Image 1 (cartoon, rainbow, N blue to C red):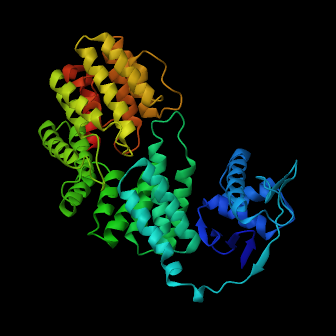
Image 2 (cartoon, rainbow, N blue to C red):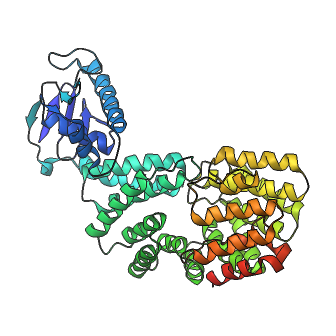
Length: 477
């Protein structure tokens, strides 16, 4: 069924809106809300019904609905200033969608309906969802925060045109997961994209159970949601289905730890040499184990890869110079560490997905280095810069003798408490708090950064920190 009103044409099956033949971009909730209203033209529709139509069972506020209605009115108003107002309407934002106080909303324009046969659609229309998918996939590979937003819109467009196209569900799931990751430094993380992404990843796995891409994407999202065992199982399934796809190996390395991470990241470098992110993942395991030589070799390779990919549009990496600086600081080479950390900051404004988080961590590490260099003023400024970027940064907060945010995870809260105790010269108590937290943490990478934690500096006081270092090392083997 196709609904026509004013200069617009709305396909009821796909939710695709056209104005004078040109496509009008709508988000998935906007498309669903408009379709629901147009199908009930003249009737008052409650807010609850529109929220259900637009967001299914996700918990959202009335404000989200109001924003969607406002955006729809703006798009429709732009249309009728060109093509004339709807029958009996006026040139106002509410000419199509009327607010009925205390009841809901009503679509007021005259609507004509006829049927549409997809078999006679032109080739261009048939290719449109697949073209949108290709563009979305290209944007995702940049790992750029703004490009991820464009990718999400492209995948949503593809699914409006082809609702059961599994690769578009995969792409949308990954875009949602990366959007969630991008909020790590924010005062409050937005969990809605993650929940939506998991739904689409599960849908893709059901539509295409032999798709390794669907399973590895599900693995990534489950890991972000704290389901580490399920994530590892999904990643293993993906690599079994498609063993020569480096993306599956990269996600497997991300969601696993210890030997499994080392093997998966090595597989990435075999299939896709020079990928900085794979070197970063391998280096974290070696650092947790206290294998300084292996970690340093991996980090140097990673730094070269990061520098070579600085302007690349394909999976650029960040954080390798940060790791190099941390290793140098752990061996008391503070001037060289400062230089490496300053190099890392040159990527702070790159737009890369993890650049802000990495910049906050780098400023914290610089603050610790300055403190050890007996530069208290510079140290305090650096910790403050970390908190400007990431207001919830636990280590920088603790370094400034401030209370750890209540939203911090158990392991992060323990790290913060250990830093506060260490700054008060209570190193034995700091080591005890850290050890207890690591011992109680579920299997995984919790506490991996301890050997190179720049403010605690445990390698300078192994007698006190030996038990904690041993626990971290054991978890990584």
